[in-house]
Image 1 (cartoon, rainbow, N blue to C red):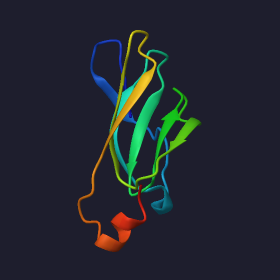
Image 2 (cartoon, one colour):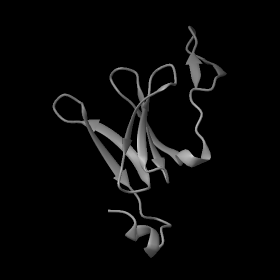
Image 3 (cartoon, rainbow, N blue to C red):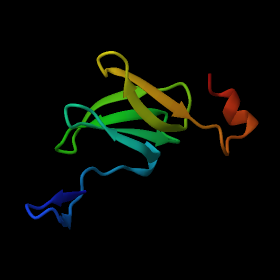
Image 4 (cartoon, rainbow, N blue to C red):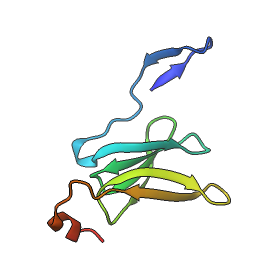
Length: 98
C-alpha cells in the first residue's frame, strides 16, 4: 500500500497485510464504506475483510474454492455478492464443491 502525500504523490510502499500460501491467492479487492478492504481468495474457500490497519476483522467461508471478486450492493450497501471460478479444477475437485 502507498500513502498519498500532501502534494498528491505516492509515498513509500508499506505492507498492508500478509497472506500465507494456505490462504489462497488474493483476488478482487474492494473497499467498504468504513475503510475496510474485502479480498476474495482464489483457492482459499473464503473472502476476508481487513480493517484500515490491515488486521483481519471478518471471514466468510464459501462452499467453493475459487473466490474471484467481492462486490457490495443492496439498498444499504451491506449485501455482499461474490463471483467464483471453476478454471483449473479437476472433475474430482469439482465434486468436492457444492
